[in-house]
Image 1 (cartoon, rainbow, N blue to C red):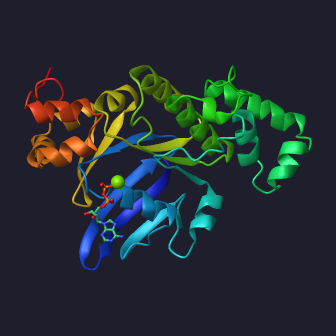
Image 2 (cartoon, protein in one colour):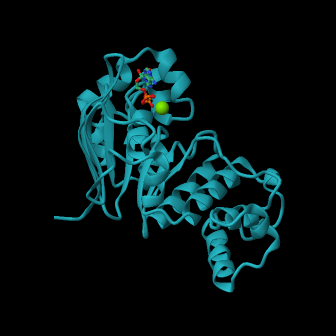
Length: 276
Ligand code: ADP
Ligand code: MG
């Protein structure tokens, strides 16, 4: 059996009796890249919240490298090696990409020491390598507010990596990106997956197809289906869940999804349900 970096055992999260997560079971292998999909309200954000400790399970256990996270604070969990990228980039716009990465990889030192002090040559090398990985070498020394939206997303992924977490949690990294940037971010996540375990929440089905080996579908706080992207898209229950919800909801949440477009136009043959 492969080593598990993350195990979620029978986790329920109740908000005033409403179960945002309902007896959820899930596990992730060390080094695995997994994509989580699911309709609006399925529990995806809550799922990330119980991993990072922002929300504690009402019932059940979350284990990271075999360790129960129950009694740990968000900060302690992050120090154990879980990093989370939120949907909107949280970068310092007035600093350059290089400075953003330097600050993140030096959380212990204060910001001014990082900016005006001397970084070791090992540190500089790591940052140069990271800039290359995220494709920002050429723009490393311009203010980050001059970067495109896609470049900002890649910078923030780089900042996450600079904290050297073992598990990366990434929430909708390609929302609002051009096709070219979507592909860049996909390639970046694939590169990172060679040395990290990665959990991505995503709606854009073309993107999911680009990066996913295994996909988990959440619905009403539980796992509805797990499998390859083809298995998932051809599962009648998955199709029903996606097509069954009001189109307005679907449209607003899945704005950038080819899946949504098909659902809305009821032309399901491209992405859902029909074996190729
Ligand atoms: P998703 O990210 O898949 O859209 P969420 O995890 O945000 O779903 O939410 C799952 C369900 O739990 C939704 O119905 C949402 O309204 C509800 N929910 C989430 N957080 C809270 C909260 N703090 N209090 C009450 N209900 C919540
Ligand atoms: Mg959400």
